[in-house]
Amino acid sequence: MASITDVVKEGLKYPFNDGKKVLTLGIIFLVSSLVSLAMEYFVFDNMRILANMAPVDTVQAAVSALPPSNMALIVLSWIVTFILMVFASGYIYDVIKYGIEGKSELPEFSDIKGLLVKGLRAFVVGLAYSILPMILFFLGLMLTVNESVGASVNAIGGIVLLIAIIFAIFVSLVNVMALCNMVDKDELSAAFRFKEILGLIKNLGWGRFIGILLFTVIVIMIISVFFGFIFGAIAGIISVIVGSAFVMALVNMILNSLLINPYVSIVISRVYGSIYKEATKTELETI
Amino acid sequence: MILDIYKDSLEYSAKDLKTLLILGVTYFLSFLLLPIFLIYGYSYRVTKISVEGMINGNDPLPEFDNIIDMFVDGIKVVLVYLIYVLVPFIIFFLFAVISSSIGGYGESALMAIGAVITVVLILFAYVMSMFGVAHMANNGDSLSKAFNYKEIIEIIKSVGVTRSLGAYIGLVIICSAIYAVVFFLILFVFGFFGIFTGTLGFAMAAGGIFVAGFFIAYFVMLFIVGPYTMIMQSRVSGLLYNLH
Image (cartoon, rainbow over all chains, first blue to last red):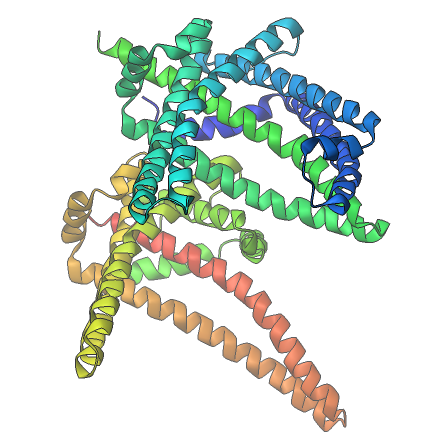
Protein backbone atom coordinates (compact mmCIF):
# COMPACT_ATOMS: atom_id res chain seq x y z
CA MET A 1 0.00 0.00 0.00
CA ALA A 2 1.52 3.28 -1.03
CA SER A 3 1.55 5.97 1.61
CA ILE A 4 -0.28 9.25 1.24
CA THR A 5 2.83 11.21 0.34
CA ASP A 6 4.06 8.57 -2.10
CA VAL A 7 0.88 8.95 -4.15
CA VAL A 8 1.28 12.73 -4.22
CA LYS A 9 5.00 12.57 -5.03
CA GLU A 10 4.35 10.26 -7.96
CA GLY A 11 1.60 12.55 -9.18
CA LEU A 12 3.89 15.58 -9.03
CA LYS A 13 6.61 13.84 -11.03
CA TYR A 14 4.30 12.32 -13.65
CA PRO A 15 3.88 15.34 -15.99
CA PHE A 16 7.65 15.58 -16.35
CA ASN A 17 7.63 12.25 -18.18
CA ASP A 18 6.46 14.01 -21.33
CA GLY A 19 6.68 17.79 -21.29
CA LYS A 20 5.45 18.11 -24.87
CA LYS A 21 2.01 16.71 -24.05
CA VAL A 22 1.75 19.05 -21.07
CA LEU A 23 2.52 21.97 -23.36
CA THR A 24 -0.05 20.76 -25.88
CA LEU A 25 -2.70 20.75 -23.17
CA GLY A 26 -1.38 24.16 -22.22
CA ILE A 27 -1.96 25.44 -25.74
CA ILE A 28 -5.60 24.32 -25.52
CA PHE A 29 -5.97 26.21 -22.24
CA LEU A 30 -4.15 29.18 -23.73
CA VAL A 31 -6.35 29.48 -26.81
CA SER A 32 -9.44 29.21 -24.65
CA SER A 33 -8.15 31.93 -22.30
CA LEU A 34 -7.18 34.19 -25.19
CA VAL A 35 -10.65 33.83 -26.67
CA SER A 36 -12.20 34.74 -23.30
CA LEU A 37 -9.83 37.68 -22.89
CA ALA A 38 -10.63 38.96 -26.37
CA MET A 39 -14.34 38.71 -25.63
CA GLU A 40 -13.91 40.60 -22.36
CA TYR A 41 -12.16 43.27 -24.36
CA PHE A 42 -15.17 43.60 -26.66
CA VAL A 43 -17.74 43.22 -23.93
CA PHE A 44 -16.12 46.11 -22.10
CA ASP A 45 -17.39 48.51 -24.75
CA ASN A 46 -20.87 47.02 -24.46
CA MET A 47 -20.72 47.27 -20.68
CA ARG A 48 -19.92 50.93 -20.99
CA ILE A 49 -22.92 51.45 -23.31
CA LEU A 50 -25.16 49.65 -20.83
CA ALA A 51 -23.78 51.64 -17.93
CA ASN A 52 -24.41 54.89 -19.69
CA MET A 53 -27.96 53.81 -20.38
CA ALA A 54 -28.72 52.91 -16.78
CA PRO A 55 -31.22 52.73 -15.19
CA VAL A 56 -32.74 50.29 -17.68
CA ASP A 57 -36.32 49.07 -17.36
CA THR A 58 -36.45 46.15 -19.72
CA VAL A 59 -33.89 43.63 -20.86
CA GLN A 60 -35.26 44.28 -24.33
CA ALA A 61 -34.24 47.92 -24.27
CA ALA A 62 -30.79 47.04 -23.03
CA VAL A 63 -30.07 44.33 -25.54
CA SER A 64 -31.38 46.36 -28.45
CA ALA A 65 -28.92 49.12 -27.65
CA LEU A 66 -25.95 46.80 -28.15
CA PRO A 67 -24.24 46.58 -31.51
CA PRO A 68 -25.78 43.42 -32.98
CA SER A 69 -22.68 42.06 -34.67
CA ASN A 70 -20.81 41.71 -31.41
CA MET A 71 -23.50 39.51 -29.84
CA ALA A 72 -22.99 36.80 -32.44
CA LEU A 73 -19.25 36.96 -31.84
CA ILE A 74 -19.74 36.63 -28.09
CA VAL A 75 -21.95 33.58 -28.40
CA LEU A 76 -19.46 32.09 -30.84
CA SER A 77 -16.67 32.61 -28.33
CA TRP A 78 -18.71 30.83 -25.65
CA ILE A 79 -19.18 27.85 -27.97
CA VAL A 80 -15.48 27.77 -28.87
CA THR A 81 -14.42 27.96 -25.22
CA PHE A 82 -16.89 25.23 -24.27
CA ILE A 83 -15.66 22.89 -27.00
CA LEU A 84 -12.04 23.48 -26.05
CA MET A 85 -12.78 22.81 -22.40
CA VAL A 86 -14.66 19.61 -23.25
CA PHE A 87 -11.64 18.56 -25.28
CA ALA A 88 -9.34 19.26 -22.33
CA SER A 89 -11.66 17.33 -20.00
CA GLY A 90 -11.46 14.39 -22.38
CA TYR A 91 -7.70 14.45 -22.11
CA ILE A 92 -7.97 14.63 -18.34
CA TYR A 93 -10.29 11.60 -18.52
CA ASP A 94 -7.49 9.71 -20.27
CA VAL A 95 -4.94 10.86 -17.69
CA ILE A 96 -7.14 9.38 -14.96
CA LYS A 97 -7.36 6.16 -16.96
CA TYR A 98 -3.58 5.95 -17.32
CA GLY A 99 -3.33 6.64 -13.60
CA ILE A 100 -5.66 3.75 -12.79
CA GLU A 101 -3.61 1.45 -15.01
CA GLY A 102 -0.39 2.81 -13.58
CA LYS A 103 1.12 3.65 -16.96
CA SER A 104 4.10 5.95 -16.88
CA GLU A 105 3.45 7.59 -20.28
CA LEU A 106 1.04 10.42 -20.87
CA PRO A 107 -2.01 9.83 -23.06
CA GLU A 108 -2.06 10.84 -26.73
CA PHE A 109 -4.11 13.55 -28.35
CA SER A 110 -5.35 11.31 -31.14
CA ASP A 111 -8.95 10.11 -31.50
CA ILE A 112 -10.52 13.57 -31.29
CA LYS A 113 -14.07 12.23 -31.36
CA GLY A 114 -13.29 9.91 -28.46
CA LEU A 115 -11.80 12.75 -26.45
CA LEU A 116 -14.84 14.93 -27.06
CA VAL A 117 -17.20 12.15 -25.98
CA LYS A 118 -15.18 11.47 -22.83
CA GLY A 119 -15.02 15.15 -22.05
CA LEU A 120 -18.77 15.46 -22.38
CA ARG A 121 -19.24 12.50 -20.03
CA ALA A 122 -16.98 14.13 -17.45
CA PHE A 123 -18.85 17.40 -17.86
CA VAL A 124 -22.24 15.74 -17.38
CA VAL A 125 -21.09 13.91 -14.25
CA GLY A 126 -19.69 17.09 -12.73
CA LEU A 127 -22.88 18.96 -13.53
CA ALA A 128 -25.13 16.25 -12.13
CA TYR A 129 -23.21 16.07 -8.88
CA SER A 130 -23.36 19.82 -8.40
CA ILE A 131 -27.13 20.21 -8.83
CA LEU A 132 -28.28 19.10 -5.38
CA PRO A 133 -25.67 21.03 -3.39
CA MET A 134 -26.37 24.15 -5.46
CA ILE A 135 -30.12 23.94 -4.83
CA LEU A 136 -29.53 23.51 -1.12
CA PHE A 137 -27.03 26.36 -1.11
CA PHE A 138 -29.35 28.80 -2.86
CA LEU A 139 -32.23 27.77 -0.60
CA GLY A 140 -30.12 28.47 2.46
CA LEU A 141 -28.82 31.70 1.01
CA MET A 142 -32.28 32.97 0.16
CA LEU A 143 -33.68 32.07 3.57
CA THR A 144 -30.77 33.81 5.30
CA VAL A 145 -30.68 36.98 3.25
CA ASN A 146 -34.42 37.52 2.90
CA GLU A 147 -35.49 40.53 4.98
CA SER A 148 -39.24 40.27 4.58
CA VAL A 149 -39.40 37.02 6.58
CA GLY A 150 -38.92 36.79 10.34
CA ALA A 151 -35.54 36.53 12.09
CA SER A 152 -36.15 32.91 13.04
CA VAL A 153 -36.42 32.00 9.36
CA ASN A 154 -33.10 33.75 8.80
CA ALA A 155 -31.57 31.57 11.50
CA ILE A 156 -32.97 28.44 9.87
CA GLY A 157 -31.53 29.71 6.61
CA GLY A 158 -28.14 29.97 8.26
CA ILE A 159 -28.33 26.38 9.43
CA VAL A 160 -29.44 25.26 5.96
CA LEU A 161 -26.48 27.15 4.51
CA LEU A 162 -24.09 25.39 6.87
CA ILE A 163 -25.57 22.01 6.02
CA ALA A 164 -25.34 22.92 2.34
CA ILE A 165 -21.62 23.65 2.63
CA ILE A 166 -20.88 20.39 4.46
CA PHE A 167 -23.04 18.50 1.98
CA ALA A 168 -21.24 20.16 -0.92
CA ILE A 169 -17.86 19.06 0.45
CA PHE A 170 -19.12 15.49 0.88
CA VAL A 171 -20.60 15.46 -2.64
CA SER A 172 -17.40 16.74 -4.23
CA LEU A 173 -15.44 13.95 -2.50
CA VAL A 174 -17.83 11.32 -3.84
CA ASN A 175 -17.62 13.06 -7.23
CA VAL A 176 -13.90 12.26 -7.36
CA MET A 177 -14.41 8.54 -6.85
CA ALA A 178 -17.44 8.56 -9.16
CA LEU A 179 -15.32 10.04 -11.97
CA CYS A 180 -12.72 7.31 -11.45
CA ASN A 181 -15.34 4.58 -11.43
CA MET A 182 -16.73 5.89 -14.71
CA VAL A 183 -13.26 6.02 -16.26
CA ASP A 184 -12.42 2.48 -15.17
CA LYS A 185 -15.70 0.91 -16.26
CA ASP A 186 -15.87 3.25 -19.30
CA GLU A 187 -19.60 3.77 -18.78
CA LEU A 188 -21.44 6.97 -17.92
CA SER A 189 -23.78 5.08 -15.60
CA ALA A 190 -20.86 3.86 -13.49
CA ALA A 191 -20.56 7.38 -12.10
CA PHE A 192 -23.94 7.03 -10.43
CA ARG A 193 -23.65 3.61 -8.78
CA PHE A 194 -23.46 5.14 -5.33
CA LYS A 195 -23.24 1.91 -3.36
CA GLU A 196 -20.27 0.76 -5.41
CA ILE A 197 -18.57 4.14 -5.18
CA LEU A 198 -19.04 4.50 -1.43
CA GLY A 199 -17.80 0.93 -1.03
CA LEU A 200 -14.62 1.83 -2.92
CA ILE A 201 -13.98 4.82 -0.67
CA LYS A 202 -14.55 2.71 2.41
CA ASN A 203 -12.09 0.16 1.05
CA LEU A 204 -9.44 2.82 0.70
CA GLY A 205 -10.42 4.33 4.01
CA TRP A 206 -12.04 7.74 4.34
CA GLY A 207 -9.01 8.95 6.28
CA ARG A 208 -6.53 8.08 3.55
CA PHE A 209 -8.91 9.33 0.89
CA ILE A 210 -9.32 12.75 2.46
CA GLY A 211 -5.64 12.75 3.46
CA ILE A 212 -4.40 12.26 -0.09
CA LEU A 213 -6.76 14.90 -1.49
CA LEU A 214 -5.97 17.38 1.26
CA PHE A 215 -2.22 16.92 0.89
CA THR A 216 -2.51 17.35 -2.88
CA VAL A 217 -4.47 20.57 -2.36
CA ILE A 218 -1.83 21.93 0.02
CA VAL A 219 1.01 21.11 -2.38
CA ILE A 220 -0.81 22.59 -5.37
CA MET A 221 -1.56 25.76 -3.41
CA ILE A 222 2.09 26.21 -2.45
CA ILE A 223 3.25 25.63 -6.01
CA SER A 224 0.60 27.99 -7.42
CA VAL A 225 1.52 30.78 -5.01
CA PHE A 226 5.19 30.37 -5.85
CA PHE A 227 4.72 30.41 -9.61
CA GLY A 228 2.10 33.13 -9.30
CA PHE A 229 4.81 35.34 -7.81
CA ILE A 230 7.44 34.39 -10.37
CA PHE A 231 5.14 34.84 -13.37
CA GLY A 232 3.76 38.05 -11.93
CA ALA A 233 7.31 39.36 -11.60
CA ILE A 234 8.20 38.34 -15.16
CA ALA A 235 4.99 39.84 -16.50
CA GLY A 236 5.63 43.01 -14.51
CA ILE A 237 9.15 43.40 -15.88
CA ILE A 238 8.01 42.83 -19.46
CA SER A 239 5.11 45.24 -19.08
CA VAL A 240 7.44 47.93 -17.70
CA ILE A 241 9.78 47.51 -20.65
CA VAL A 242 6.94 47.60 -23.15
CA GLY A 243 5.12 50.31 -21.25
CA SER A 244 1.64 48.82 -21.24
CA ALA A 245 -0.41 47.55 -18.31
CA PHE A 246 -2.50 45.32 -20.55
CA VAL A 247 0.65 43.43 -21.53
CA MET A 248 1.21 42.47 -17.88
CA ALA A 249 -2.19 40.81 -17.60
CA LEU A 250 -1.64 39.18 -20.98
CA VAL A 251 1.82 37.78 -20.25
CA ASN A 252 0.75 36.62 -16.79
CA MET A 253 -2.24 34.83 -18.25
CA ILE A 254 -0.20 33.26 -21.03
CA LEU A 255 2.46 31.89 -18.67
CA ASN A 256 -0.12 30.63 -16.21
CA SER A 257 -2.47 28.93 -18.66
CA LEU A 258 0.34 27.52 -20.80
CA LEU A 259 2.46 26.11 -18.01
CA ILE A 260 0.81 25.91 -14.62
CA ASN A 261 -2.80 25.04 -15.44
CA PRO A 262 -2.02 21.94 -17.54
CA TYR A 263 0.59 20.79 -15.01
CA VAL A 264 -1.80 21.14 -12.08
CA SER A 265 -4.69 19.50 -13.97
CA ILE A 266 -2.56 16.52 -14.95
CA VAL A 267 -1.17 16.14 -11.41
CA ILE A 268 -4.65 16.18 -9.87
CA SER A 269 -6.04 13.71 -12.41
CA ARG A 270 -3.06 11.41 -11.92
CA VAL A 271 -3.67 11.47 -8.16
CA TYR A 272 -7.34 10.65 -8.77
CA GLY A 273 -6.26 7.66 -10.87
CA SER A 274 -3.80 6.52 -8.20
CA ILE A 275 -6.53 6.85 -5.56
CA TYR A 276 -8.76 4.50 -7.54
CA LYS A 277 -5.86 2.13 -8.09
CA GLU A 278 -5.21 2.03 -4.33
CA ALA A 279 -8.91 1.60 -3.56
CA THR A 280 -9.23 -1.42 -5.84
CA LYS A 281 -5.87 -2.85 -4.85
CA THR A 282 -6.88 -3.24 -1.22
CA GLU A 283 -9.98 -5.08 -2.42
CA LEU A 284 -7.79 -7.75 -4.04
CA GLU A 285 -5.68 -8.15 -0.92
CA THR A 286 -8.65 -9.09 1.20
CA ILE A 287 -9.54 -12.04 -1.02
CA MET B 1 28.84 11.83 24.49
CA ILE B 2 26.84 14.97 23.89
CA LEU B 3 30.02 16.96 23.40
CA ASP B 4 31.10 14.43 20.77
CA ILE B 5 27.78 14.99 19.02
CA TYR B 6 28.32 18.75 19.11
CA LYS B 7 31.85 18.47 17.76
CA ASP B 8 30.80 16.11 14.97
CA SER B 9 27.90 18.36 13.97
CA LEU B 10 30.00 21.52 13.97
CA GLU B 11 32.49 19.89 11.65
CA TYR B 12 29.83 18.24 9.53
CA SER B 13 27.96 21.44 8.78
CA ALA B 14 31.17 23.19 7.76
CA LYS B 15 32.16 20.47 5.31
CA ASP B 16 31.12 22.15 2.07
CA LEU B 17 30.76 25.86 1.51
CA LYS B 18 28.96 25.35 -1.81
CA THR B 19 26.11 23.56 -0.04
CA LEU B 20 25.80 26.41 2.44
CA LEU B 21 25.70 28.92 -0.40
CA ILE B 22 23.00 27.03 -2.28
CA LEU B 23 20.95 26.81 0.91
CA GLY B 24 21.66 30.46 1.58
CA VAL B 25 20.21 31.52 -1.76
CA THR B 26 17.16 29.35 -1.07
CA TYR B 27 16.86 30.99 2.38
CA PHE B 28 16.95 34.36 0.64
CA LEU B 29 14.09 33.40 -1.67
CA SER B 30 12.05 32.04 1.21
CA PHE B 31 9.56 34.90 1.04
CA LEU B 32 8.10 33.02 -1.90
CA LEU B 33 6.95 30.22 0.43
CA LEU B 34 8.04 27.26 -1.71
CA PRO B 35 11.82 27.52 -0.98
CA ILE B 36 11.08 27.20 2.75
CA PHE B 37 9.91 23.65 2.15
CA LEU B 38 13.02 22.90 0.08
CA ILE B 39 15.17 24.00 3.03
CA TYR B 40 13.28 21.82 5.51
CA GLY B 41 13.40 18.98 2.99
CA TYR B 42 17.17 19.27 2.87
CA SER B 43 17.40 19.36 6.67
CA TYR B 44 15.26 16.20 6.74
CA ARG B 45 17.83 14.49 4.50
CA VAL B 46 20.56 15.53 6.93
CA THR B 47 18.58 14.00 9.80
CA LYS B 48 18.04 10.82 7.81
CA ILE B 49 21.74 10.44 7.03
CA SER B 50 22.59 11.07 10.68
CA VAL B 51 20.03 8.55 11.93
CA GLU B 52 21.44 5.93 9.59
CA GLY B 53 25.02 6.96 10.28
CA MET B 54 27.01 7.48 13.46
CA ILE B 55 29.09 9.97 15.39
CA ASN B 56 32.37 10.81 13.62
CA GLY B 57 31.18 8.42 10.94
CA ASN B 58 32.40 10.32 7.89
CA ASP B 59 28.87 10.75 6.53
CA PRO B 60 28.56 12.88 3.40
CA LEU B 61 26.35 15.93 3.06
CA PRO B 62 23.09 15.12 1.27
CA GLU B 63 22.65 15.86 -2.42
CA PHE B 64 20.27 18.33 -4.03
CA ASP B 65 18.73 15.84 -6.42
CA ASN B 66 15.10 14.74 -6.49
CA ILE B 67 13.74 18.21 -5.82
CA ILE B 68 10.11 17.10 -5.77
CA ASP B 69 10.86 14.51 -3.07
CA MET B 70 12.74 17.16 -1.10
CA PHE B 71 9.80 19.54 -1.44
CA VAL B 72 7.20 17.01 -0.25
CA ASP B 73 9.45 15.86 2.63
CA GLY B 74 9.82 19.49 3.62
CA ILE B 75 6.05 19.86 3.79
CA LYS B 76 5.88 16.80 6.06
CA VAL B 77 8.53 18.20 8.40
CA VAL B 78 6.77 21.58 8.58
CA LEU B 79 3.49 19.79 9.35
CA VAL B 80 5.17 17.92 12.22
CA TYR B 81 6.61 21.13 13.70
CA LEU B 82 3.35 23.04 13.26
CA ILE B 83 1.19 20.40 14.91
CA TYR B 84 3.57 19.95 17.85
CA VAL B 85 3.80 23.69 18.46
CA LEU B 86 0.02 23.98 18.22
CA VAL B 87 -0.41 22.52 21.72
CA PRO B 88 1.50 25.24 23.65
CA PHE B 89 -0.10 27.79 21.36
CA ILE B 90 -3.63 26.67 22.20
CA ILE B 91 -2.83 26.57 25.93
CA PHE B 92 -1.39 30.07 25.76
CA PHE B 93 -4.49 31.24 23.94
CA LEU B 94 -6.71 29.64 26.60
CA PHE B 95 -4.75 31.37 29.35
CA ALA B 96 -5.10 34.69 27.54
CA VAL B 97 -8.85 34.29 27.09
CA ILE B 98 -9.48 33.19 30.67
CA SER B 99 -7.27 35.81 32.24
CA SER B 100 -8.68 38.65 30.19
CA SER B 101 -12.18 37.79 31.41
CA ILE B 102 -11.05 37.84 35.06
CA GLY B 103 -9.42 41.23 34.99
CA GLY B 104 -7.50 43.04 37.70
CA TYR B 105 -4.68 41.43 39.70
CA GLY B 106 -5.90 37.98 38.80
CA GLU B 107 -5.31 38.72 35.14
CA SER B 108 -1.62 39.58 35.43
CA ALA B 109 -0.92 36.75 37.84
CA LEU B 110 -2.65 34.17 35.67
CA MET B 111 -0.95 35.45 32.52
CA ALA B 112 2.45 35.25 34.22
CA ILE B 113 1.82 31.64 35.19
CA GLY B 114 0.45 30.99 31.72
CA ALA B 115 3.53 32.47 30.06
CA VAL B 116 5.88 30.33 32.13
CA ILE B 117 3.85 27.19 31.46
CA THR B 118 3.78 28.02 27.74
CA VAL B 119 7.56 28.43 27.58
CA VAL B 120 8.06 25.07 29.28
CA LEU B 121 5.54 23.47 26.91
CA ILE B 122 7.30 25.02 23.92
CA LEU B 123 10.55 23.43 25.08
CA PHE B 124 8.83 20.05 25.35
CA ALA B 125 7.19 20.53 21.95
CA TYR B 126 10.60 21.39 20.47
CA VAL B 127 12.25 18.25 21.88
CA MET B 128 9.29 16.06 20.96
CA SER B 129 9.11 17.38 17.42
CA MET B 130 12.86 16.96 16.84
CA PHE B 131 12.69 13.38 18.08
CA GLY B 132 9.49 12.95 16.11
CA VAL B 133 11.16 13.94 12.83
CA ALA B 134 14.11 11.63 13.61
CA HIS B 135 11.66 8.83 14.39
CA MET B 136 9.94 9.47 11.08
CA ALA B 137 13.31 9.37 9.29
CA ASN B 138 14.13 6.08 10.95
CA ASN B 139 10.80 4.48 10.02
CA GLY B 140 10.56 4.98 6.29
CA ASP B 141 9.40 8.61 6.13
CA SER B 142 6.01 7.72 7.58
CA LEU B 143 4.23 10.84 8.81
CA SER B 144 2.15 8.88 11.30
CA LYS B 145 5.34 7.72 13.07
CA ALA B 146 6.22 11.33 13.82
CA PHE B 147 3.07 11.60 15.96
CA ASN B 148 3.38 8.25 17.70
CA TYR B 149 4.14 10.05 20.97
CA LYS B 150 4.16 6.87 23.05
CA GLU B 151 7.03 5.42 21.03
CA ILE B 152 8.81 8.77 20.95
CA ILE B 153 8.60 9.18 24.73
CA GLU B 154 10.03 5.63 25.09
CA ILE B 155 12.95 6.62 22.90
CA ILE B 156 13.54 9.85 24.80
CA LYS B 157 13.52 7.86 28.05
CA SER B 158 16.08 5.41 26.72
CA VAL B 159 18.35 8.22 25.56
CA GLY B 160 17.80 9.89 28.91
CA VAL B 161 15.35 12.70 29.56
CA THR B 162 17.88 15.04 31.18
CA ARG B 163 20.43 14.21 28.51
CA SER B 164 17.99 15.06 25.72
CA LEU B 165 16.77 18.26 27.34
CA GLY B 166 20.33 19.26 28.10
CA ALA B 167 21.47 18.50 24.57
CA TYR B 168 18.78 20.67 23.03
CA ILE B 169 19.18 23.55 25.47
CA GLY B 170 22.90 23.40 24.81
CA LEU B 171 22.20 23.40 21.10
CA VAL B 172 20.15 26.58 21.37
CA ILE B 173 22.94 28.21 23.37
CA ILE B 174 25.59 27.18 20.83
CA CYS B 175 23.56 28.48 17.89
CA SER B 176 22.91 31.79 19.66
CA ALA B 177 26.62 32.03 20.43
CA ILE B 178 27.52 31.50 16.77
CA TYR B 179 25.14 34.25 15.69
CA ALA B 180 26.50 36.59 18.38
CA VAL B 181 30.12 35.95 17.42
CA VAL B 182 29.45 36.56 13.73
CA PHE B 183 27.50 39.70 14.56
CA PHE B 184 30.27 41.19 16.67
CA LEU B 185 32.86 40.17 14.10
CA ILE B 186 31.06 42.14 11.41
CA LEU B 187 30.50 45.01 13.81
CA PHE B 188 34.20 45.08 14.55
CA VAL B 189 35.38 44.78 10.95
CA PHE B 190 33.15 47.51 9.60
CA GLY B 191 33.58 49.64 12.64
CA PHE B 192 37.28 49.49 11.95
CA PHE B 193 36.77 50.46 8.33
CA GLY B 194 34.52 53.28 9.42
CA ILE B 195 37.06 54.66 11.85
CA PHE B 196 39.82 54.22 9.31
CA THR B 197 38.09 56.23 6.59
CA GLY B 198 36.98 58.64 9.25
CA THR B 199 40.51 59.44 10.29
CA LEU B 200 41.41 59.90 6.65
CA GLY B 201 39.00 62.79 6.62
CA PHE B 202 35.97 61.19 4.98
CA ALA B 203 33.64 61.71 7.92
CA MET B 204 30.42 61.18 5.94
CA ALA B 205 31.81 58.22 4.03
CA ALA B 206 32.87 56.65 7.28
CA GLY B 207 29.33 56.50 8.56
CA GLY B 208 28.04 55.37 5.17
CA ILE B 209 30.59 52.62 4.73
CA PHE B 210 29.98 51.38 8.22
CA VAL B 211 26.20 51.21 7.94
CA ALA B 212 25.98 49.96 4.34
CA GLY B 213 28.76 47.43 4.64
CA PHE B 214 27.42 46.32 7.96
CA PHE B 215 23.95 45.60 6.61
CA ILE B 216 25.20 43.86 3.48
CA ALA B 217 27.64 41.68 5.37
CA TYR B 218 25.08 40.99 8.07
CA PHE B 219 22.53 39.66 5.63
CA VAL B 220 25.16 37.69 3.74
CA MET B 221 26.35 36.13 6.97
CA LEU B 222 22.77 35.40 7.97
CA PHE B 223 22.26 33.42 4.81
CA ILE B 224 25.37 31.37 5.52
CA VAL B 225 25.12 31.07 9.30
CA GLY B 226 21.41 30.26 8.96
CA PRO B 227 21.89 27.15 6.83
CA TYR B 228 24.91 26.21 8.96
CA THR B 229 22.92 26.16 12.20
CA MET B 230 20.06 24.38 10.49
CA ILE B 231 22.28 21.54 9.25
CA MET B 232 23.84 21.39 12.71
CA GLN B 233 20.47 21.08 14.43
CA SER B 234 19.33 18.33 12.10
CA ARG B 235 22.56 16.41 12.54
CA VAL B 236 22.39 16.69 16.34
CA SER B 237 18.78 15.49 16.36
CA GLY B 238 19.68 12.47 14.25
CA LEU B 239 22.79 11.51 16.26
CA LEU B 240 20.97 12.04 19.54
CA TYR B 241 18.16 9.76 18.36
CA ASN B 242 20.72 7.05 17.67
CA LEU B 243 21.69 6.94 21.32
CA HIS B 244 18.52 5.01 22.19
